[in-house]
Amino acid sequence: MTEIHKGKYMFGTVKVGERGQIVIPKEARDVFDIKAGDELLVLGDKEKGIAIVKADFMKKLALKILGGGEKSDKNAQE
Image (cartoon, rainbow, N blue to C red; front, side, top):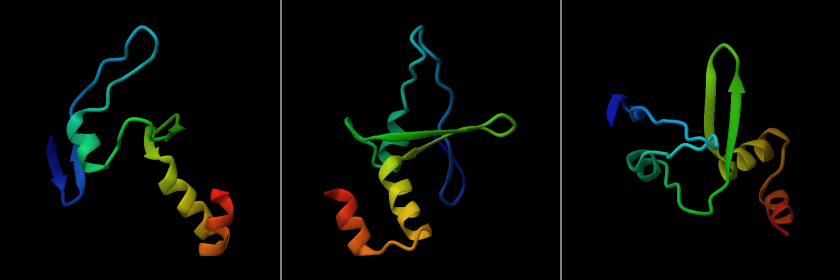
């Protein structure tokens, strides 16, 4: 793992398996607190590439964008 700038990392390369699977490097899982069973959202831009983010982070961001507060968040969990 190489820290490029504070909070910006390069974790190295991974190989895509026959079934299209990759292994997220342990260092990346540790930094981003990714555990077995976590849901990840895969985003893509043909020019910029692929991004993988934790789905719960995006859910919180979407609620903020849509004007939802704690009440909306509690309703979303039910």
